[in-house]
Image 1 (tube, rainbow, N blue to C red):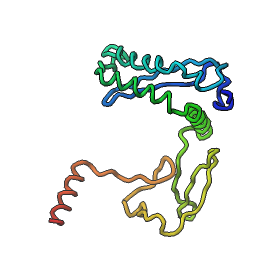
Image 2 (image 1 turned 45 degrees about the vertical axis):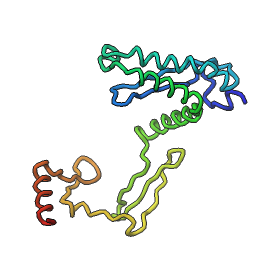
Image 3 (image 1 turned 90 degrees about the vertical axis):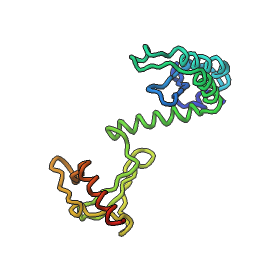
Image 4 (image 1 turned 90 degrees about the horizontal axis):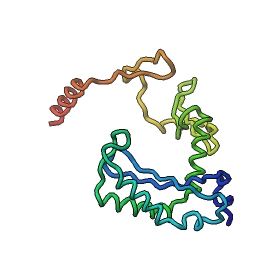
Length: 193
């Protein structure tokens, strides 16, 4: 199988293969990009030296200290360094870089198309105050359908003392202050006791 068939965006000189390690309770993650010859024919040729890539990721974790990452770095324990190596090897042997790269390119295209992140779905009222659902298809085109009556049991905005948003569509609900919430919860507990 040629690299072009396996990786649809492989015509670029540097094919994106990357290893990442996110230490637990850390302020940052570690990323290693692997430069690959575009003439490589198989994935085995690309990651043939996978152990050295995993070692390089582990070494970057070992080099990390408080002075790195614009002051956000930290000293990592030996167990985290070993975990970085293990995760790097695991990613090289199991991660479908082609699929992830294709998904990344698709998300970038959808971001441009929508002018921001594409929503997974939106529920909104139409002109007759009947609820509709908008779900984008795979190409990012909106698919709109009316909802069945009773499928969504939401209170009317007026019932929640909401006011129309004067800056756009929708409603604004006044948020309860921390003190009001405590008082309300205390009163509810008294009633239930």
